[in-house]
Amino acid sequence: MSYDDLAGLRISVADGVATVTLDHPPLNLMDGVLLPSLRGFVDRVRHDTDVRVVVFDSADPEFFSAHGDMAYLTDPDALPAATAAAIAAAPDAPIPDGMNILEAMSDEVRTLPQITIGKIAGFARGAGNEFLMYLDLRFAAIGRSGQAQPEAAMQILPGGAGTVNMARLLGRPRALEILLGGELVGAELAERYGLVNRALPADELDAFVDRLARRIARLRPEVIAAVKNTVETITPKIPHHAYAVENAALFSLFTEDMVESAHRQLAAGVQTREGERDLERILDSL
Image (cartoon, rainbow, N blue to C red; front, top):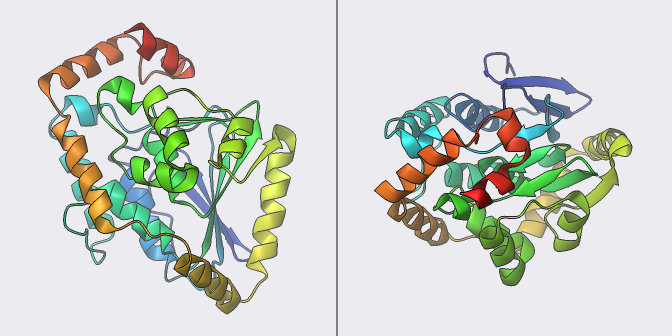
């Protein structure tokens, strides 16, 4: 299976493990480049019998993925264009009624036959953190990782399955805290809340994830599929109507006030590397 044409991604396959490295400077934004490439990869790897485990990481030591492109809020053509490109990247995978493209990806990633792993050694906010929540397993570097859903401070909500997946993983009270409080969650709190499987010393993260991925990849594909399918049957599945409720709520918040607020955020430094290092303080100041 070839993956060389997927812009913003570097993909290598060895010993049953596909390593997917987000490499889309300056911030690995979930934009009209990265979003279609990720969906195209998911569509292809589903049928790749050489891959039993998929590890997602970042080429940027500071950012896994900053968030979705702010143009989605300020340019009425940006989100439809990114959506169209993502649909074209996997034309045989229909988008269920009432769901947006990121919500559809949540289901598509979750139902992959392979085990998916997120390796977090930088900031993952908004759509970047939402993507991580689609994965089967997540591991974070102590002192280097940070996860957040800042959308409420941006006058919207996490509409890429962020609300439903956060509630599924953390439970109602903690999900509300993260979704409405908007604070950056470090690796150790993320582990305690259930947002990641483990918080690991930064210098041990790579080796741990590599060992785990290779150990799983040595299993027969039938064993991986049987375990994953059995666990799935006893894990509450997110009904499509929950995604539809989230999607409708998201677009109900696309108001003129929200657009004006987004322009103020950009003027204050959001979606620059310097600004993204201190995003929560910037949003609080506005």
